[in-house]
Image (cartoon, rainbow, N blue to C red; front, side):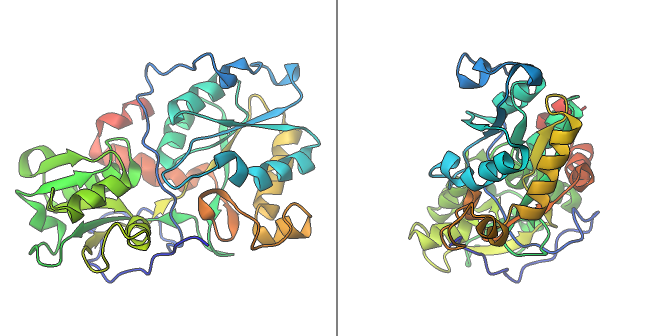
Length: 334
């Protein structure tokens, strides 16, 4: 069962346009985005596929491992089986090295379906790739696909808000991480803080590493996604009560599955969209014989229920982040 976070009582998010107005239900670990401007596919299996949909019968589905992923292909098996059932075509799953490979693979017509992070999806979509975001994960039926970013500090640190970070050493995840950098950057800017001038920035490289740096005393505060502390407490890496939240962002849209509408014909797109939006959940997967039981039905990132419908409009908050922060990682969105 996926570790769920009990939503803490924290300082309200800084007054700014809400990222989403819908309730927070889940979060998925963000995988940092590689530099995209010079990204190219290697000579591996992703590049081996034909670039034309008409030249192959299989549908290629690619995803990138997240921090908690143990067997990515296995967790996507129910989803790929559902797509095969809906289309009558074989789905070939590809475990990609990073989002840059996925983006360039879809641009080259070698990947038909991809699981993205919210920021990498926006970069791919706005760079001209014909993508349609169709679903994102949720832990409860009827919930909205969203998560949050939190800032943590030690209980006795004297830090109670983002304003208290002035002059402090602060851990972030990666400059291309949505919840580990871009969202915190917007929060700091709205508080009147300049990351370069007002605090010491430490890039930890991962959500877990960010909080572990704080727990070990290497930094004064740290940003991470909303499920990371629960995970670290559950594994015994951080003692209960050692870190407390001092700020929480507005909701951030969840990781979408996006279809390449250049390589997939309109009829196939409709079949896949319909199947994912109506049946990519544990009860439906059991009913259709794809999973033996809800308990045995394992989905990516230990998703407890399944997938809910999304559209490109749900990712406007990510574009807003880039407009506000003008972060270097957003250059590919222009």
